[in-house]
Image (tube, rainbow, N blue to C red; front, side):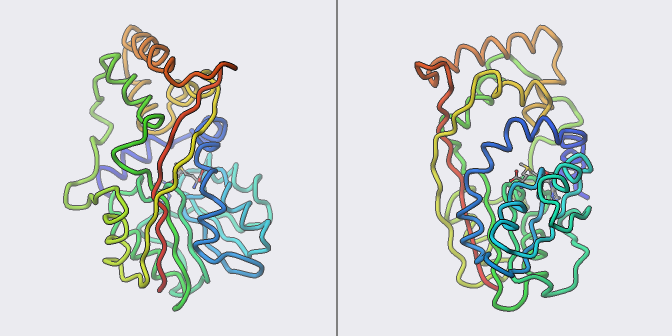
Length: 269
Ligand SMILES: C[S@@+](CC[C@H](N)C(=O)[O-])C[C@H]1O[C@@H](n2cnc3c(N)ncnc32)[C@H](O)[C@@H]1O
C-alpha cells in the first residue's frame, strides 16, 4: 500500500451513509454512459470496482447483467448489498483483485481510479480480470476542475485550512497522470488496453446548499477530512467562505447549480 492508499483508507472509513446522501448523487450522472461504454447488457458478466453504495451495480442489474461488486470499505459494502441485492458483493481493493484472469465480460470503475495510489497498476488489474475482447470503462474527475467542482476547494482555501499530516497531499509524481482526455487515454493504452478512447462529460449538478455542505461537514472524501481536521474557528471560516462562494451558483429557488466535468475512458482487452 502506498502512503496515498493508506490515507484513502482513513478518508473512506465509516463514510458510506454520508457519501450516499451527498456526493453519490453527483457521481450517478455518468452511470448510463459508463455501462454503455463497457457494453453492459442482458447476461453480461460485469465487475463494478469501488462500487461505493452500489449505484453502478444496481444499474447493471437493471440491464439484466450478472453483477459482482467490490469495495475495500465495509460501510460502502453494506450499502451496496442493500442497493443491489442481486449482485455478489465482496471486499477487495485495487491494485489486486481476487478474481482469475478473464473472469468478466466487462469491468467498470466509476470515480475510483482517482482514489488509488497506483493508477497504472490498477488499470492493468482491471484489464487482467476482463476476458480477451471484453471492455474496461472508467471515469475520473477532469483537471482543472469545472467551476462547480472547484467550489469546495476554494472555500477550504478561503477559510485558511491547514493539511493534517495523516492526509496524503496527492499521488507520488511518478504515478500521476494528466487528468485530460489525452492523459487518461494514454494511461489505458499503457495498461495494454486496445482501442482506448476518452471523452469529456459535462453536466450541472443541482443540490441544496445544505446537502452540498453535508459532505465536507460529514468528512466525505479528502476535502471532508481536511475540513474535519481544522479547529472550530477555521471550520466556521470555511463555512462562511462556502456561503460566500455559493452565491454565484444559487438559483432563484435556492438550489445550487454546479457545473462539473468528468473524463470517461474505455478500452478493450
Ligand atoms: C467516489 S467513490 C465512488 C463510488 C461509486 N463507484 C459511485 O459511483 O458512487 C470512491 C469509492 O472507491 C473506493 N475505493 C477507494 N480506494 C479503492 C481501491 N484502492 N480499490 C477499490 N476501491 C477503492 C472507496 O471506498 C469508495 O467507495
